[in-house]
Length: 280
Length: 106
Image (cartoon, rainbow over all chains, first blue to last red; front, top):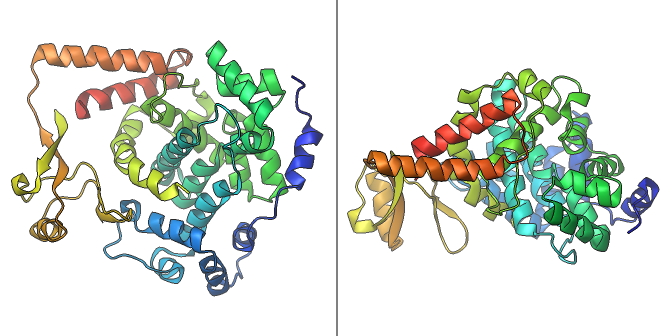
């Protein structure tokens, strides 16, 4: 099997269909304070599939609303634009890729893991000075490089997945050995192509080596949340494994046993609803 | 030890805590997990003809059962952490999950 070249991946990424206008505008809005919220809400509302999934998330116990929200506009009024933006990005972006032609890639397990990382990152965000909604989005999207590989290079990625099972090694190691790149790097290339805001770029590209990012990066948070999700065994597969936690990330977040223990019950309580809300 | 039990609605009492969210056929959350059952929630569930719900309950555990559970949880964690090494932070994560599993979950 020939290893993938960076240029080959970039060329494929450039051929991807354009993101729905509502999603690319939301991405651009991270650097623009003068956005027309009503117009973007209207644009989101025109995509019925996206709207239905966003409202499912908004109405889950995750947000603890006393009454149901029925429209995107209501969700913006009640939850705020930033929360709705995070939700739309989280549920809209993963739906762009179709991984069903990659043997061995288990979309359900992928989503369960991402949901758990999103919940863990959100739970840890407040006390470490991160925006909880952005942390949730970062968690949901952190492994999007896997989706890119499964959807665009299914035969090669199937080989990396088989290698992983055969060697009982970490997925990033299997990807590097078989493909020459790992999903973090590929996610980073996608983040460049789609112009993710820097926080999400770091979450996607650096969550396996957060020490390379600056202090305060979302990569620290997603790295630890990734470890928590694997340690909870949320995908219920025998080959799941926890990677060593990086000391730098742990110390920069100021974590200890008590803080981790405190977030575990809420994560497990909200898992099924979150997975159901995110499923396409 | 906290555990979860499935109860017919007639057996549910006000003040119990819901362990798993009640979701209708359309995927809408009727009552979120963690909610304390009140009169109005109970009546709402009766109106919607919900047959049973899963609530949290406290259960005494004898020492032999506890030891058996500790061994089972430790074996599961050792499998998940088989390549995680013995770094101090990773061991703290292990300890957090072990504590949670032994205190909270059957």
